[in-house]
Image (cartoon, rainbow, N blue to C red; front, side, top):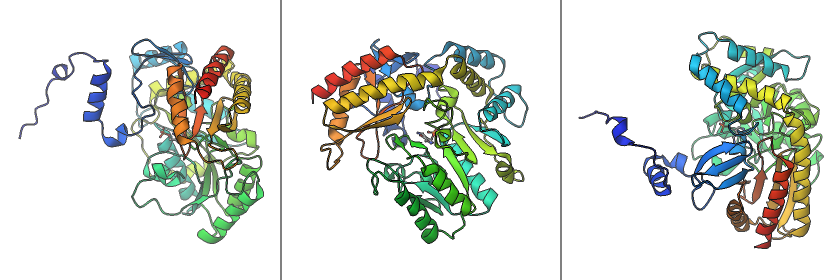
Length: 443
Ligand code: PMP
């Protein structure tokens, strides 16, 4: 049997940017698992990015309100990030954690310094949010030596087996036996939640689940303080505090999934849990930490992370110096360019635009979010809240024609998510307001 591999130069004479060629190659060579998740009816091919803008292969400009799924925190092709990455790649592109290198070591110290004082924080670097969520779950179980673990319905934590089992949206849960011992509690969604806009009934649901579905002794809980993919659903004030108290009383540890809401995005705090006046035991972070370079981290209290000391947990690409070099600069740029504050100020301007769209267009049922993590939810009827899924798809495709990239999300795919790079400008907000008003008027 021949195993000869043809020379790559024979396979790809030169990059073919034509739509047909790209679509053809993807359809022919991408696995369904990588092909299925596409937003627009017709493909959007992207060629260049700068700041909060993107250009397609024909040179059409877009305002990027999705930030490549929130990965681009400080702006596309930020010159300082690019320079740090090039410098590191020129010297050493990888150094596995079996060997020593100062870049990730410095970055671990710098990340630990962003965490609440008075605790001994340690860091484990890896490549994706799902990997980090998996490790956080493993740490919780190793430390407590318990299995039962809580997650919130409508949450998203990633695609790997562990992260998928914690995820509370069926579209991301596959027909395989899910990891045992994960129990989902009611989502305290103040717009659509089963108990409406309240707090205590949702906390009582936690008591009920602990009291009925678990041994009464917990490994922990994972919460996105603001659910991201689920449609920008902020946990109500007091929920994290009440949930953490209950979980800790049952012996568990508390994990904040900051993959979307962390890194200054909420405007008021660097970590979104800080807006809820709690201190988690473990933080999961990814996406914006690397401004597009593959990077994730678990930040944990030392005594919890120490529970894995007598086993190996090795990520070949963990603590990659090129990604960590990007991460170090991202932290500096957020600080020096005042991007967290920008998220607060421009986020407020954007929220006001969304509120005025809400007043003008009945199809908008709800407007919500914090900082530059915002959403509008579309409904057929404000009273019944029936999701306007088709209309959302229509507005979404139309907004692209007006030069806007957003995300269509939520379990009913009726939420338009606005999660741009943190360098969004007031002029962009005006541009968005005009374009969206025209889109909604066309319905
Ligand atoms: N947690 C949250 C809150 C996320 O939004 C995501 C990704 N959408 C993940 C975890 C998983 O991250 P990744 O896709 O990098 O594995």
